[in-house]
Length: 170
Ligand SMILES: NC(=O)N[C@H]1NC(=O)NC1=O
Image (cartoon, rainbow, N blue to C red; front, side, top):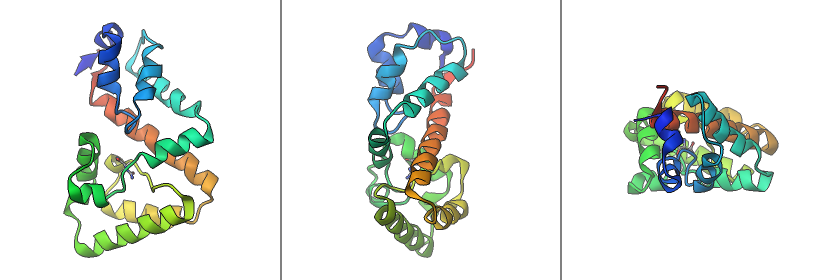
């Protein structure tokens, strides 16, 4: 764990290495946020990553959404998730689902992607298998614009929890 002070004094390339996946596969966010140093508080660091997301165009937001792996999907089965995503999916219990739950989640993920053109994203650490299934069933009824917004909000939650694994307040 790093202190905020250590984060402020890290060499640029180290900052990008340490924070390069707090938004899944989006090093550019860390490159942008590093220039906002120094931070007074841990919360300010989170806010800058969130601002990075808010400033993106819709097209750029779609790139971020599309960089996320499906929950309980092909990459998970192959063991090819990022280490962060692996832990998150585990924490929701997705590594221990039965065949029926897996086929429901997979079918809903496919339907969602077919409707919206990007994957269903939810902060796995704030959910369990059933609430993820419930989310898949209810969110597919939303409009595409609503789901772009909801997806990015979930990316913000994932991002904040990833930062809290790296930095402590003092
Ligand atoms: N599809 C999706 O929500 N993926 C993500 N959610 C999460 O908590 N970690 C992820 O990789």
